[in-house]
Length: 127
Image (cartoon, rainbow, N blue to C red):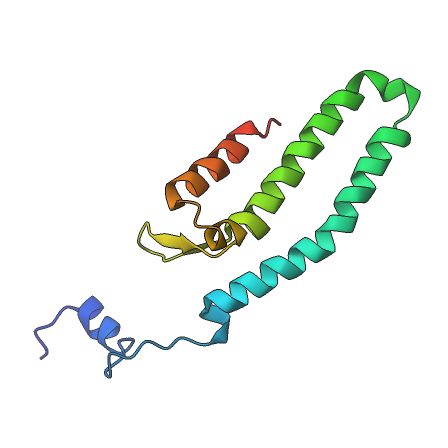
């Protein structure tokens, strides 16, 4: 009989014996950056159409909610651009770690300031 517990035996089969991580292109920071830039390119016309609809096509019955809708939409757009263009956080899970890949890191904006900015934008969204 084997003296090792069952969970240890099962976890050994999943371990990489060469200690070289199996990392492909889909796990890379370049892929994350590319996907978020494509997302920004696709979402920008949708955001502009949302502004158009809120500003010029809001019915008179919803006139009292127009400014609230516009305020919410502005914060959603700012949050979207802060994550997908300005900061692009590359998280190293399962640890609470990561680093930014966005435009702000090109201009040597501190990581702490970028994290604070994203948290402010998350907290500013009212539902």
